[in-house]
Amino acid sequence: MMVTRYWPCALVISLLLGCAAAPPPAATPTQRSASASGAPAAEPSRPADQTAYLHVALAHVHAQAGQIADAVAELRKAIDRDPKTASLWILLARWLGRLNAHDEAVAAAKQALALDPASGKILAQGRLKGAVDNFFASPVAADDKIFMVSESGKVAVLKPDGSLEVLVVNDLDDLCYATPAIADGRLYVRARNTLYCFGRAAAARER
Image (cartoon, rainbow, N blue to C red; front, side, top):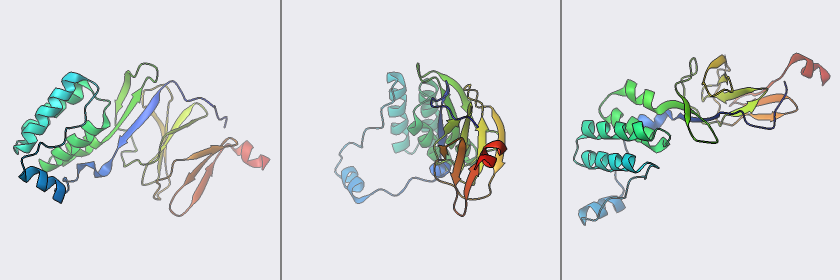
């Protein structure tokens, strides 16, 4: 397995956060104090697109008034204009969870984006076929492929063309949070109970 020194043309960003659909935590004493004193709430994260930011601000107004459905509608408009901001997807998943739209919440949270690193243009967006899971490890590239390892140990092998096309999924059936390491033509994956090493058979016989 030949390891290249350069990333493929497409940079894959994982937005696979399974816990994002959980209800928001209770307000802290500081937040309750600010609310009681009439102080304005913290400004929402500003997306790169100004119109998207206005939609986000309006979404927060609806949410503070308890109008979650309207907040979700405004937030979707913001995401349409700025789908690369991960915090918007996380917020959408949380609000959908509060509406008990759990399937939609999971779909919003478990997304992958393939971006052109030069322009930032979105090349593909969606869920990884056969590997819909929580992802904490970063993607790595080698042998003209992209490797992504999920929390439950699913190793997804993707084409490096930005299409998010999954070539194969290998299920290790073990918890994995660490980013794989690449050395001497081999891919090392550290799971909870086992350290795995993957490589071509010829490379293995050289040892």
